[in-house]
Amino acid sequence: MNVTPSLAIGDGALGFWTALEEEFPQCRQQRCWVHKTANILDKMPKSVQPNAKRMIHEMYLSPTKESAQKAYEEFLKLYTAKYPGACKCLEKNKDQLFTFYDFPTEHWAHIRTTNPIRKIVKVRSF
Image 1 (cartoon, rainbow, N blue to C red):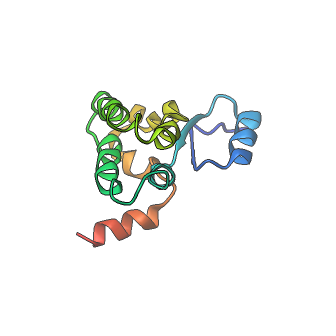
Image 2 (image 1 turned 90 degrees about the horizontal axis):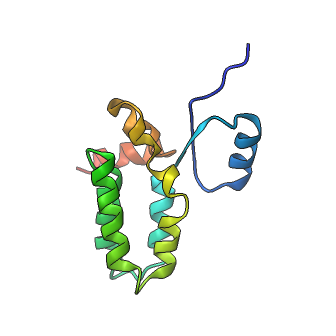
């Protein structure tokens, strides 16, 4: 019996996505927000990173897809002129960043990232 996955979550590893599209072309894709955040911030000066990180968190912690996309647009409006590399990184795979919003809310925390250990560490730091 062949079972097709509904969703695959991963970072930017091209081999994974190529294989997935080859084997399961109808499977939905979710890019990992932890990896994406690190990649975006890496393209910005340290002095800007705290505010940028807060804005990125606003995207994937928003209660609705619409408010997440509004936060996305605000980030681009604020940073595109000065940090085009960071914004280009955010724009890459936009559709795959917000896929998790199409699934039940109770699953969001588990499917927006490939890093469950980081989620545990974040919870413990409060």
